[in-house]
Length: 419
Ligand code: LLP
Image (cartoon, rainbow, N blue to C red; front, side, top):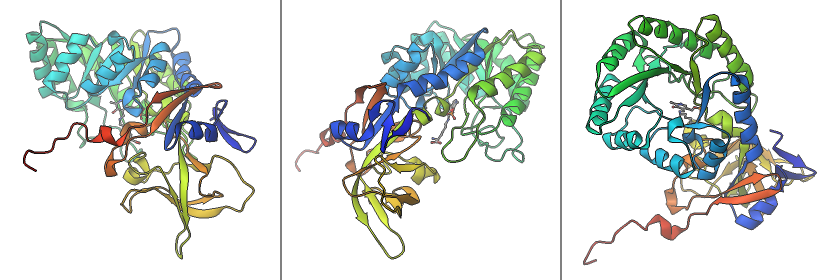
């Protein structure tokens, strides 16, 4: 990313040197580039210009309210998956009428909260959910606008890396059942059918599965409308990948243009188009800065022990995800191969394996492309407070989240009497 780069020997996010931010705010520290986020959303918006559209940022990727504010100000809506995310989005200044509510397990309380807020659409994932939503809406004296999330069953053989768009997983309504479920939806008193939705997976690096899923979706739109149920918008989900190592995903504008071309060719160009990107808007905008605590040479492995751990960044431990790790200050020293590990008491607590690094204790490393599914998946395991977060714009930087203090971690716990 041009927004995360070395100037001389020092790694910068925009015009801010990471060792300076680390000295000011401490570590572990997440740092995000606002320009990078705006460039990423701009690519979607440019490709969609001139037609009715909405980019709904999938806020699960990074839900800091200043990040949400950045996207709200850029005209985005939001894809939410819980009542908690709804509260965050509203606190950040999101327009309720630009929010879509996804997820297989919405509770009645969350449905009520979203109806009262006036969200644009519920992406409904089952017939049972539809009945409950109609009931909740009717009791509240409201109508719930809905899309069905359909499962396009994109060929697993061709695209084995796609996980959520296949038969046999928990997401969405089966393609074969969709017409029946739409007709049922249209008959319910608390429901207004407005669109169709699909999301086929994450970290997708090719256009073909999107085009395949789109074709399957347009087939359904035609079938559903032949039964007199109107679908005003097409929500094509999220999932576009980013470069962690050598992946070469299509850029958002190229992918969107290809999808729009297919939509127009098939005569669906009048419909409103929604996307729900998460990772591709924030992933490359962020880094996790951590201090090297100890170097521990060994017979089989050398360990570089840093102050960030699996609780700060779960992706390597959880998915064996490879994320680049670099020194915040390049030295002329010969690199040594390390396993980069944290202080947590688990062998699974590693950030990277077999990484060449020329670093000393007290210096800083940065895990790159850590803007998505990083801080938002952090935990308090080992009673470690979560990291601080900083947003950078040019030479300005703002602390957008305080480092969590240990006392905050057991604030809601209670000793029992007589102890
Ligand atoms: N829409 C729905 C309904 C989703 O479930 C997701 C992500 C998105 C949109 C956004 O997808 P994206 O554009 O970010 O790929 N924790 C994993 C990724 C989980 C993705 C979950 N759903 C990771 O760290 O790789």
